[in-house]
Length: 239
Image 1 (cartoon, rainbow, N blue to C red):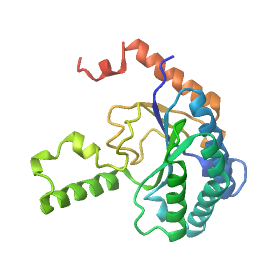
Image 2 (image 1 turned 90 degrees about the vertical axis):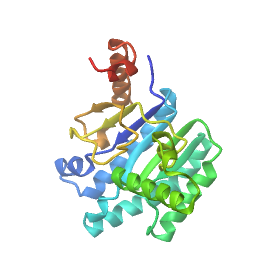
Image 3 (image 1 turned 60 degrees about the vertical axis):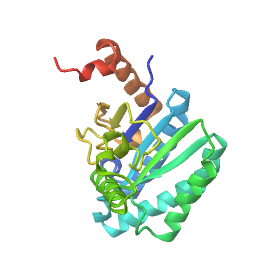
Image 4 (image 1 turned 180 degrees about the vertical axis):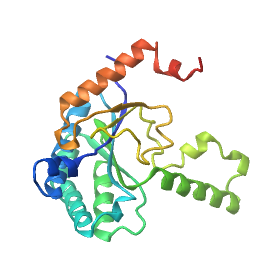
């Protein structure tokens, strides 16, 4: 089976999972963290080299303060509890998103996770935190514009390649497969540049119910599309 090197996941449905069970939203987020742990363990076993997860969007700050506080607490707990295991398992952690304005303790934990695991190669876990695709593109455009103003580069040196090399995901290949749970059929401002040619799989299950079997099914769907179309690149050719 042809396995995508890079899989990205929009982990959606924690709140609805909890509501369906008469539980507080925090219970859904906690169950979602456990689903993430299982997915991180399964990914390298299934041949995935890069796993990007949408952990906290730049729009999530508009949620109730209590829920945002709960999410920050779960992030801290995940890193403090799981970082040693991730490192021991050879997982490299990369964080994408805007870190400006984050609380110092959050920034410190993110930096610690990246520094400790920088040399690992079994799996690169990319955590999209305080991330939005449009915001990333705007920040990248500003960086390149500043470089032109400083005289560090000519304006005609700005190409698709140089733009991609300045994104948060520099050095990371674009995802071949994007998975979204909860039955929603949209990208929600996730990896807008990087997902331009990605295959999309939408699953009806809520994220806390996501399992190794769901991931395997999505990979089989991906491989089936590749076989039907004689290679994914062929799908981008106009008929």
